[in-house]
Length: 294
Ligand SMILES: C[S@@+](CC[C@H](N)C(=O)[O-])C[C@H]1O[C@@H](n2cnc3c(N)ncnc32)[C@H](O)[C@@H]1O
Image 1 (tube, rainbow, N blue to C red):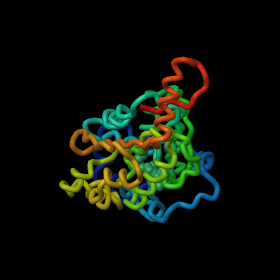
Image 2 (image 1 turned 90 degrees about the vertical axis):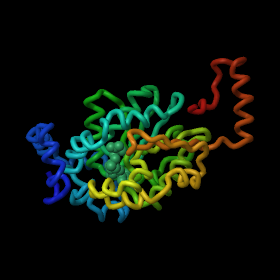
Image 3 (image 1 turned 60 degrees about the vertical axis):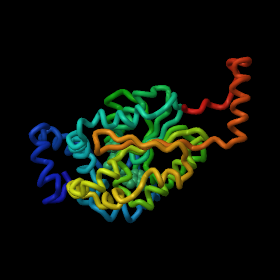
Image 4 (image 1 turned 45 degrees about the vertical axis):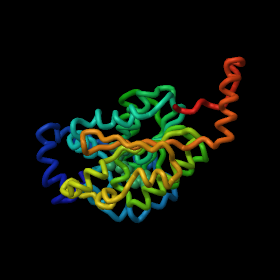
């Protein structure tokens, strides 16, 4: 695997992970994939990687996420570093989604673990995962196919997605913001606001900034270039600044946090929606605007 020597993987995580996984099998899988050919299926021609992304090692992996080694080793590591267990941490985000969304965008989707859970929870919804790494997108697509789930994957920047205004009713990001500089996280929130319909919801799952700030060794162990800046920030305030209302954060297992915000419905639209809702009972089955997600 394309993993640098003397990284957290080799020094600390690999010996632990080796106790629980069949590393030979993982290596065989890695070697069985033609990473350049497969990642080309997702690559967006002309996409320029932002400097903060392409110039850093993440988790000590050389080249960050832009290689097959990172995509292969991401899940086995993540499965073992999210207490009490990965599925329940991700489930906190899925459970925080209100109503029955019709179009969900998962930003910085990586290998798609949360994206797949969103599709399983809301099978009627069109679910799109976007990531800057075409290698991570290959893994996400591979996992979706294995699970028999129909999702869409897009290679792109979370802060400049290229989707039209108001094209989603839920936008999510899990474990993304501790890996982007705070100014970029705030741009991503502004982009999420633009992408959401009025009444749409944004949900961010990440480390609890309060806990990370208080317990500084937590920001040292994973070789994350921006985690200290993230820990010093205030996601609730960033959400408010981006225009979201009813911002609420909930901690899970002390180190994780889900933050939810709503794009407000302009007052005149809210009144119109009240009228259209009451007339919907008289005119059941007629075409109308999609119901807000909560
Ligand atoms: C820690 S991983 C999280 C992946 C996934 N969301 C999860 O919960 O496991 C961060 C992911 O964000 C992607 N990423 C980082 N900055 C990004 C950006 N500006 N736009 C899109 N993806 C980004 C990386 O390529 C990586 O796959």
